[in-house]
Image (tube, rainbow, N blue to C red):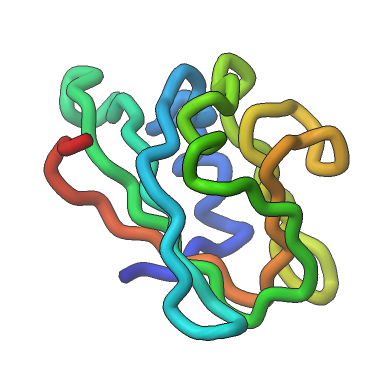
Length: 119
């Protein structure tokens, strides 16, 4: 997995079109303070082919989570908001703003990896 840094954020969001119209596939707890979320998104670098993005959140500072049944119902029309703060990274799924996101995570470290498309 590759850590997402503030300097890489703009090109990352452009490449994946702010993760708009993607779909949340799963949320998996790895430890009490870390978990993984898998999304399907379109990749501009691959001719807008669909890929899976695996996000790993480590050192959770705060979170508003949903149960598994509600994950696929998150409206991803507005994509994902990602912003860096002094303490960590705010990630909001399904809204243009962190605090209004139905699924949001405030974490110390955000890593990602691309894998082949699969639901």
